[in-house]
Image (tube, helix red, strand yellow):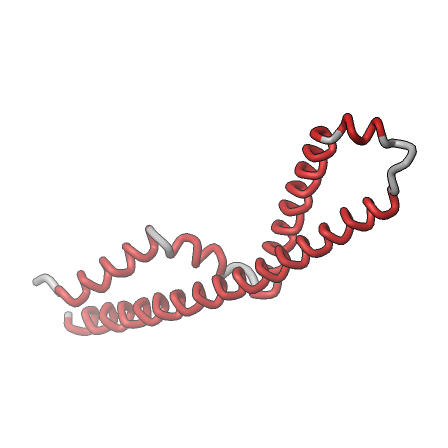
Length: 133
């Protein structure tokens, strides 16, 4: 005879495992601190590459002006502005990544807790069904 409670529970578990569960199970392999640190480092590297590309494009766009004024430019001031903006951007990206990935990890843990609760219920149903025979 079909156990509809068991079928419903198995369906819920399978849907979770095939959709968002893959990423949650992958995240469970990391400690929170390690996962967040890795993602922050990735974000900072990406922001640095993007910043370098933007500065390079601005430099190419203003190349004629830079060549004409090469002797009279205040390189220290320009370097200070470039470094200052870089520090601001990296700080914003780092903090944003830290907060975002911390929240993502916590949400993943909550979903996994529900998933494990359903697995325990499934195990209980299996134990009950084996004792019936």
